[in-house]
Length: 204
Ligand code: 0O2
Image 1: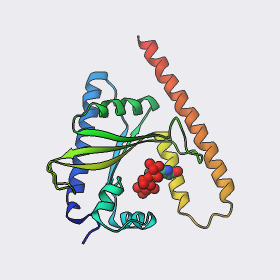
Image 2: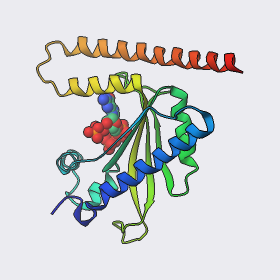
Image 3: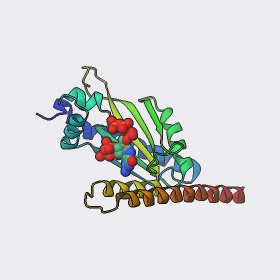
């Protein structure tokens, strides 16, 4: 039996529903404002193997309750934007959605992690037409949403890859360089934002 129990079959359907909702939001925004809200969207259902490892790491029993309630990233979505201010626009639009309740916000953009990681994390609870673990239908499922610019995403992918390389000879030097690059990219994001503003002013 899967760690997600009988709820496993719903997870890809909920992810697909979320993808459609976010895509529709982007299309509507584009129609109204003539520019897209985000560059691309990624989504995944956390593999059973990763969820089991996570539960073991947190010393949680290997049950659907641990996988779906105690951990809230069984479904994960990433929205990658061109500009920093688009991230905050997406959040505002998500807050208006009736089927979504934001339960946690973590702004690693205004408060970058010491290693240089930047991203905005949301945990949302979404109403879906399936039974949930509490026996409710429509049910409620947690989804983790990560919002980042292309620059932040590039950095996070590289850093994630390096984390799993165990044969690095000088990890302190690599960490220091990564942190320096993260700060440089943040400064580029700021410059891009300024350029966008200048173009807007020029057009008005
Ligand atoms: P995966 O494989 O990416 O899904 P949690 O650990 O989720 O119970 P926590 O610690 O509050 O709770 O999570 P946080 O800080 O919101 O971060 C969760 C996810 O953000 C991670 O998921 C990563 O995807 C990403 N993340 C956080 N910090 C870093 C970082 O320093 N570098 C990179 N590259 N990614 C980061 P998981 O669970 O690690 O796994």
